[in-house]
Amino acid sequence: MKIELIEDKLVTKLSLLEGLEAFKRKLEIPVPSIVDVKPFKDTGVKLEQRVEGSWLSNKVYGTFITSKGKAFIATQDIGKATVLFLKDFKYDLAILDLDGKIIEELEKRISSRRDF
Image 1 (cartoon, rainbow, N blue to C red):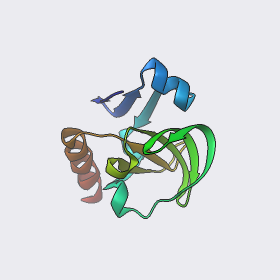
Image 2 (cartoon, rainbow, N blue to C red; image 1 turned 90 degrees about the vertical axis):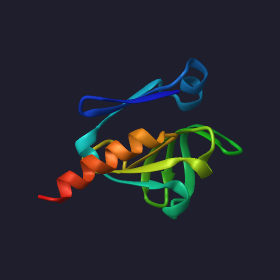
Image 3 (cartoon, rainbow, N blue to C red; image 1 turned 135 degrees about the horizontal axis):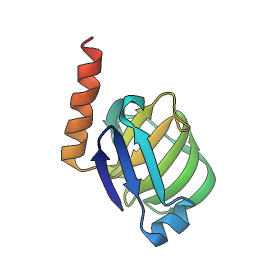
Image 4 (cartoon, rainbow, N blue to C red; image 1 turned 30 degrees about the vertical axis):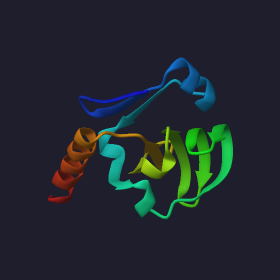
């Protein structure tokens, strides 16, 4: 899996195997649609129903209904994943394995929107 910020989009590209598990190889989220970023363990989000995808132990890929709405999930370890809360997008949440630099940049951009 490769996740990067490209201009004003967070682009997630899954490997062939991950894409088969998730029924999707690529997801582009407009950064303005991201309203909050939190560690999964701090959100209270519960996976309720698999729409399409796979769920093997902590590895989760695909589209799920959660306690907080429809989510796209691509993670090797859900307990260590990051939740993006979204608005005006086809998903309410994206649960991904984000590195610290991307999290910091997203938090900075969200904070700058709140300052206005």
